[in-house]
Length: 189
Image (cartoon, rainbow, N blue to C red; front, side):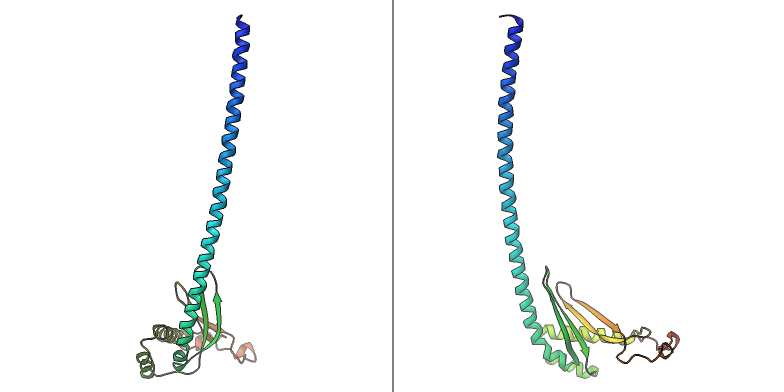
């Protein structure tokens, strides 16, 4: 056996070994791909299940909030605030957005009596106090050509109050009928 025969044999052996390694790598890659696919499917299923659990939890929380909110409404109404609209936002976190209009103004004494008489209803007390403070702020702010249009309360992870202004119910006949800024009353502190 000459040197060329030995070189051919070594090349052939190396080629066979390379082909074997290539088959092993391809088999291992296919195995890893299958494992990764199985893990991805498992993660997707797990995420979907957790998402469903979270949504069910959110719905349960909304129902609880609505129940408590409905229990607070008669007390809030006594304090001079009427519910005009409600929106329920399903998400994570969920929230209930309630719009209120002021129907009548109570004296500070009458307001305190309502708060003390209903101290056990924490939501009603919180709503009344929030609406009262927002209404006081709203009455101290003036926008040319706009009137107070109610207050929105967002009940969620972070409660929020929104004071709203809009066109007056009776629009001025002309632009000249709108009070100039210099004639608007000063905001009280």
